[in-house]
Amino acid sequence: MALLIRGGTVVNADARKRADVYIEGDTIKAVGADLEVPSGVEVIDAGGQYVMPGGIDPHTHMQLPFMGTVASEDFFTGTAAGLAGGTTMIIDFVIPAPQQPLMEAYRTWREWAEKACADYSFHVAVTWWGEGVAEDMGTLVTEEGINSFKHFMAYKGAIMAEDEVLYNSFCRARDLGAIVTAHAENGELVYQLQKKLMAEGQTGPEAHPLSRPPAAEGEAANRAARLAEVIGVPLYLVHVSTKDALDEIIRARLAGQRIYGEALAGHLLIDDSVYKHPDFDYAAAHVMSPPFREKRHQDVLWKGLQSGNLQTTATDHCCFCADQKAIGRDDFTKIPNGTAGVEDRLAVLWTHGVRTGRLTMEEFVAATSTNAARIFNIYPRKGRVDVGADADIVVWDPEASKTISAKTHRQNVDFNIFEGMEVTGLASCTISQGKVRYTRGELRVEKGEGRYIKRPAFTR
Image (cartoon, rainbow, N blue to C red; front, side, top):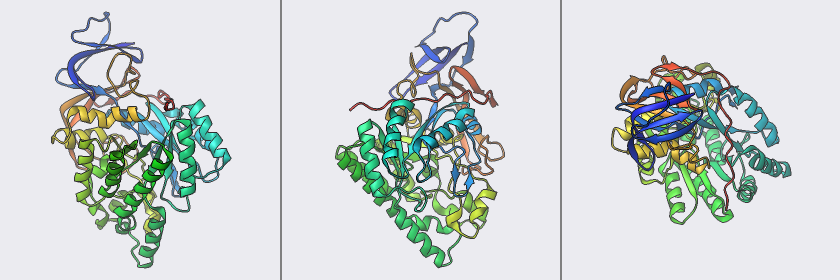
């Protein structure tokens, strides 16, 4: 199958130019002005539109068993929703239970992901330590193409990694040529504050952000960064939500550390007033960790993206419906943590980033695709519109608009944190593996079309 994207402006992270894009099979074969191609090629008219690398969401949780329930979005529905919004690849998380072999958990997630309709990869969490963990980390890197390991510094009594686990895992990752990632919140402090608030009778969603103050994130970010500094391993901090954590990243980067930060679309646009809403279902629908913060942190995060101190954007897409959130109606600590966003990330970031002048188009591409591909070592196969790259492309209509709503979104969840938001700039066509998967409101997907993407280790 061959495709020609005709008449658009190609935008990469480093430049933009008017050019046609010719695709054969799953690969880009030519990029240039007025390309001559064989007859019979399907032509996509991109006049007046931008042709960009498909989005890469480096932080999703499809089908995640968590806090006594399972996320409502599976790998098929989640990747389909992503394609409708211009995202052509996700990096999800394998999260072993304490004492569970990493390879056992990895095989389970690989089986779940076989239904995906877009490309995917995995980070693997280290939730405990032992010789078997070290051995499995080696197998994952050398045989399975995993080059990133996740560490939860929160969720005491469940998947929280103590400092001893962090030290051993960071050392092993360094020796394997892998990058470590961390959810930076001081889990002990959060646990103690949760107990205190519950004892005081503060049992509703409004207590959630009080139990996870910015200082808890800043402390953990500093601890992870200092450990990585001493051990000599690159570090990626997920869902940076506060000035406190960003300050630690900036300090470490100025000292020459290989440290990277990720911002969530939600944290850039939503503040903590949502937890004070009188309707439990509405407030609980916003419960995620780290929580949404005071407005003052949003401007800091945008500046982090503008300055390059935050490199990527993600969603932490982890869906729970109202009946699942209701598990914690009388105890906020039991509300399943998670919100959606894989379908809306590009549109909200274009609307509030590019259209407001906060980001250039090139910076938008870097933050939604290219930088994730670079950091996780799949560039330029992914994250670039160029000869030889995978034909994962979004044709972007800068004038198309819609109102985001749970009534019309494709995500398998009954709430949308961006409900009612007017966005201008949408995917008119999404191409994955050289095939049109979405065009002007129509999804053309089937289960199992997605590929598992191996990511090679880093050379020292």
